[in-house]
Amino acid sequence: MQGRTDPSRTEPGTADRTRLVERLMEQFPHVPREAVIKEDLLRGGVAFDESALSDNEGGDVKPKSYFIFSFDHGTLPELGAAALRRPPEEIVLTGGPYELRRTVVSVRVNPASPYRVAADADGMLGLYLDGRRISDVGLPPMPDYYRHTLANGKSVMEVAPTIQWGYLVYLTVFRVCQYFGAKEECQYCDINHNWRQHKAAGRPYTGVKPVEEVLEALEIIDRYDTAKTSTAYTLTGGAITSHIGGRDEADFYGQYAKAIEERFPGRWIGKVVAQALPKADVQRFHDYGVQIYHPNYEVWDRRLFELYCPGKERYVGRDEWHRRILDSADVFGARNVIPNFVAGVEMAEPFGFSTVKEAIDSTTEGLRFFMSHGITPRFTTWCPEPTTPLGRTNPDGAPLEYHIRLLESYRATMEEFGLSSPPGYGPPGAGNAVFSVSSFMDSLPAAPARTTRRGSTSVSGTQDRSGRA
Image 1: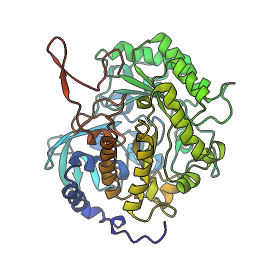
Image 2: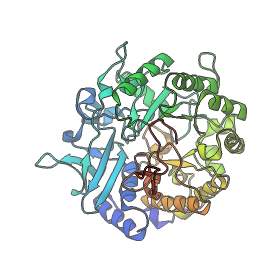
Image 3: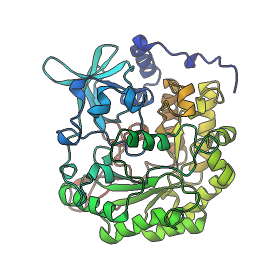
């Protein structure tokens, strides 16, 4: 993994980013050009003119909620105006010289990015690359449910923020991780720092969210989300290696699922992100009403897992982690086990792979391992947050070419094993996808329309309003 001779690691400077992007669009014409732009924004961030910032919860734009990680290329004190008037949660790109179809992108702020969101002379927002306007920009409207507070004064955004253009309610019910310190924390993860920086800034950032508050926030969302745009919820937070309030990890996160399903049966698709737990614990999740289980495996390569996930290696171990993922398919069904990996950390210096090809070969090996068992992983595009060890040594993240080749390999491996887009992520296909923290859904084929019994058309693979796949 030493001796970095791969020319794809040496990318043009910011003034030449357009050339890089267009070269990759030409080199990989079967990867949607929307995904090329989206991956570059996710890995490297975007700057915002003050004209494009929100007015926090008092304005007409849905502000960034910092729902679990910072997903920024600077700390709050380094973001300038964006730390006081939050940027939007997401942006949607359309049109421009690349004729982009509707593309939803999670916002990752980087004041030094060659990408900038700004208003033109007519007040119309656009995305600019190297000073050239490349798309129109839409901002998420403030949802009605964000305008209401809980009885104790807490905002819905603090307790139950929504992402993916309103599709997903993101319930980070434990805001820190019990893998703590250099010898246990995942080397790319800033969950604990994000907690500290929000508390230091005086922002409300509840460490453990009481079940009653979560239910009250969901009641508000259900009441005012009359279009039923919110279709799924994710229960997540830091790893629990001991107990919280006398509960182990399965019971701690499971108590929320049980309460939600009892109060709102069938309203949302219930998902939980937790460690790869023993089968009996996984069964408890299922019994509590969880429909989809995300036991994230983070990075495939054995050596990198041991280096980058020292706490997970110490408490569980890579091989046992993978065995538990496979075992969980016996409980949930393979299609409903969807582990995440952090795309890009495979190439993080000084330990990562030297070439894009090596990194893709390794990651594809992991995809084949899980997909051969009917399990479809998904991935989050790595944002090198500067307070993490890997972010400090790799401020530019992985090469854009890695991310584009990964999309190519991901789709090819899914097709090889006859798999389709996983449930609980909204519609697939460029112009349709709402999953905002990577382009895997944008890069998959759109779901074919099918005719219902009454002759109307619908899209297969999407969810009805009952929240069932």
